Length: 548
Image 1 (cartoon, one colour):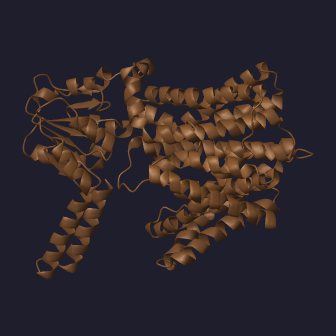
Image 2: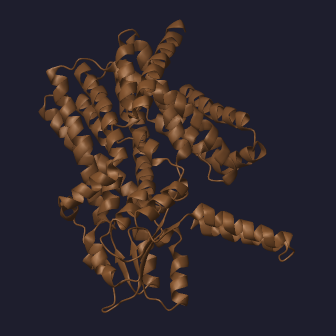
Image 3: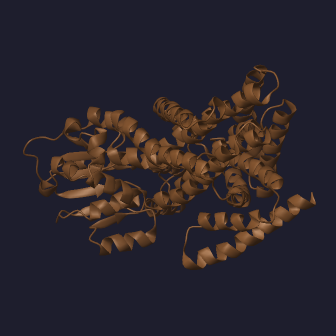
């Protein structure tokens, strides 16, 4: 116990000191966590480090499960399962072959393949999470792909536990794990929302409930001789409830992430060693697979599936880090003495390197996507705008509406009432199918693509109305070299003033509009102009519009 407490104390002291430096310089925190780990690794015993890393990973897997939007997963289930599975199988097979060519036995080549095939749900979700009321297509798509790959990770861990670590094959572990996941789903849809509804408003009790679930499911997993990861994953599914009154619990368990994230990153840094030439070779294979093959392969599949190049590339860039499941597999394999030390060191080194790279790609993903488009990568992936555009010849004085998914239907109705022709620009394939049925003029593609605006006849348009919640896309519309008035949506009040100064004809701030509508309704209620029933009905209508 003393060793663990000493390790935790040292980790948080070192992390705190270095984070102060990072905060003062405005630098990303992950490299400083890793640096703190390198210093701590000279003092802390490896056994304690491995134990801390395992528990850190388990709780972070639980927290990822809590944040999973199952409605989004259901909406994109077919494509996300196809993309996640295809990417894992192809990259896994490719790196397995390379590993055997480098002289590894089948089991160690499999460890390299697993590390390359499974992409992250940690750093990716840390920059996918946000306070925006509307989430862009690539975020929701990335989350569902991460969930698919995490399920694959659980199956891999089960398979290794049943057939590699066990003295005799234990196929029954799959049945027990299925039962544990079934229990989690039963709690999720039958019990959990009733429990959280009764505890609403008591954040301390809600946090204890969340911790109790993860500890309880991990205990059940241990009792059934399953990996603690299986229990943590099941607990996340049980707690990740879609009902509105569970949102407070989600907010409270976020505090756990602030505790366990430093533990994981620091322990990864502490596990780093001076690599041997052999280990460096395996690391190079992993980096090539994770940083290059994974994102490009996923982007190519998505483009071929109907997504625009920007969405495809941004989604692919969220898959450029070794998964925490890969780290957990390596740590368990080291404890079971079934992995070669150079392979383990390579996985840890690749994990640290991709963690650092992911902080950069997360911050500059849109810039990277634009540069790849400028260099012809998107065209090489097979994107074609002309094939999915229909604009009437000679159309003029029309309104170009961007992104109807986030409130654009109201703009279309207003233009229709004024007999004003409209051209819709959309980049979500699911929404685009509806647009093709409902609209006469449309273009499917990325607003950063000049060809999209040529097809939409920008220079002949009367105005551009952009409802996209993504700042990068709004800025791309503002940067268009045209005198056509442009109205853009903003998520923050400061952005509204900035955008107007940069040339926007107007800024749409949904929260302010909603507050103004509620204020008008309240004034009408107090003046006796509407009944309480009508006031409640208007509130429901505002909520429905805000969720569009």
